[in-house]
Length: 506
Image (cartoon, rainbow, N blue to C red; front, side, top):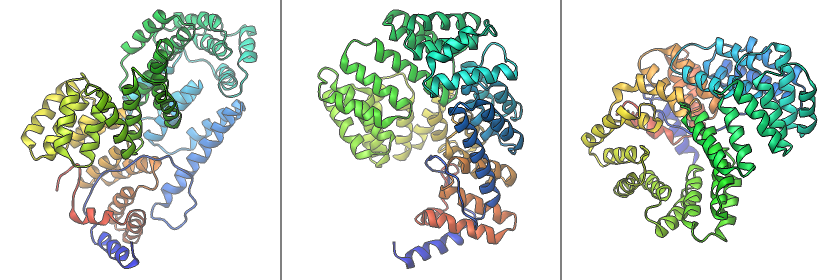
């Protein structure tokens, strides 16, 4: 883009300060060094929290657990109130076994839409039957660090067994089982995970480890029975649902007889752990020997490429799978999604209707409704959304898409989505959009802070920030924020100038 066109678009942005929109991606954050920005308070706060957390995490992984504990505790004491950050780090501390610190963060949360589901899921998945004292927590966290990160499973397990304290603790028994599992002593691992479950039969993390142990021992029927028990547990949040799905794929990988299907489930397991590169390598290797299940390999490859924003590869492999079997659900859904993304709504409708016949999942129905809406059959779309919402009240895609025809429910549905998908930046920006329209600028700042943690380089964040600053009379900072928006994505000016808003209509 030449400089004259860029300047023209920047000028358009600066003259369009009351339009709103909400769409974005999700990328990890890095500490920043910028000094001339409109949101300096947020930059400083963000850098402090991230650097403090990085120090604590590095020390934990390197088995300097007491220093890590002190760093985490200091972070909790000094961090400003922020539900998003407290939940994010609370989950990590629960994973590390620092349950008292996780509880400190939970205690500082507001009891609102965003927090309740995550707190419930976190406790159901990680928490022992009773919180231990600080000394014992640090001791057991030290054992976890050595077992998981420092290749000292055998030595650490021996130390835990020789310690006479906490013998009845379900969490200690879990760690002993984990140590034996990492040391490949599966019978002992099974013994101690059963001890843990006997003391605490509601902890799903314990059941997940048991399912893995049983599947590694080739006790297939018992592993599948345990998996069935795990899947009965109701989790609302995306993070914990994904943990359950990953466990399911691991067990299926271990218990399936076909080598090709083993590769399929292993790849899916990697994908659910955000290791898509490993997943694609497994699948590409499997293609060479796949015969009976080649369609499944192609379909999963297509889906992984689609979810990693590689539409050309996604379409190639989904089409190959669909050609082999027009009843392959994953391939059909991927072709439907690609058609919708490329605005071929007639094709997307066709594929979504085919996918609907292959599953009980609501995703194809949501696709049908949004395709009808794109084809200007808004009455049909609205009726479908209304019907779907009765039975799928916490479906993320459904809640977001339905707002296109039921915009008046934005203040009810967007918080629901935030409560089940903490890191969905699109939702935080949508909530900021709503708060700005409502004139609730303090709440808008809260939502924008969450967005900033997720992706500091999101151009929409800077646009919404400019609206808040303008409303506060800080015009120079507002202009600076708009310039930052233009610097990241100058083409967005054309969208802003049209006054279009995904959540409010034109």
